[in-house]
Amino acid sequence: MRQFKNNYTQRKQLRIRRETIERLREPPPPPDPAEELLREWPELQAFGVEWVRKWLNLRERLIEITKVMRRFPWMVDVVRQRPMSVLHPYVVNAFVAVDGSEACLQLASRTFCARGGEVREVKLELERARLEPYEGKLREVYRPKGLFAFTAAAKEYVEIL
Image (tube, helix red, strand yellow):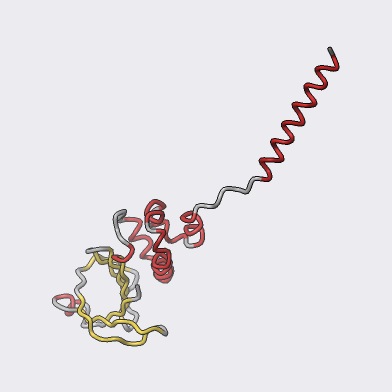
């Protein structure tokens, strides 16, 4: 009777060891691509994980948006304060004054501009003026139109997104 118990426990221990070895042989589950992107570009967390998952197929555009947000950290705070979960990545635009004194972030129909550290919501109406080299790329230069042209002292803006 005693030998039976030993054989039983030995078999049980062998079975447990085999199962453990088989589990160790299994490859780990593939990492979530959205989580990987958020780890690499933490500024995207301002939009939210679900938004990033939804638009993961537009990875290059998301990275483009993040690079601009790294350059202008106030944009991350603006996006966090105003969640827009249905926002399409191609509706997010950023403009910089040609002289670099002002930067604007356009989220669908709302535009936020920062000048001298102060962020405010503005009505941004632009008309396309011409193509011009900016930071090594050929970019469109926009001229303000309407009332905004007078408040912005007739500056020209370059679209960086």
